[in-house]
Image (cartoon, rainbow, N blue to C red; front, side):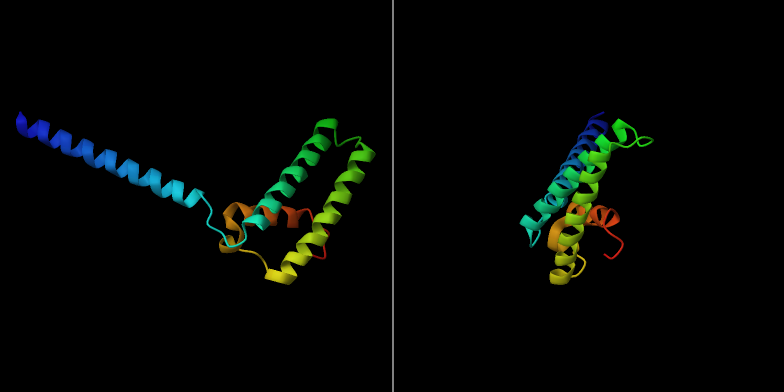
Length: 118
């Protein structure tokens, strides 16, 4: 009986230690260590605004689009396109080491909504 109890306690310790290690590792990888945190924040903010406008556009109905909102979305896309061109010229296509994984995802989303030249 003592052997079963000892094995159970040992397994419990291993499982708990493993879970704590996974949590620490996940926390470390989710906290971006990037060379350009301001650029990362800028891109995340731009994506937030991009999605806000697009969600509003969808909510109002794309069958009969709100022309003012469409103009705002196009203007915002043009501004983002100009900014993406500058970033590419200065840094090339920014990767996770420069702006983090979420920053690269944001950059890619903005590029998808950019003018075709980017």
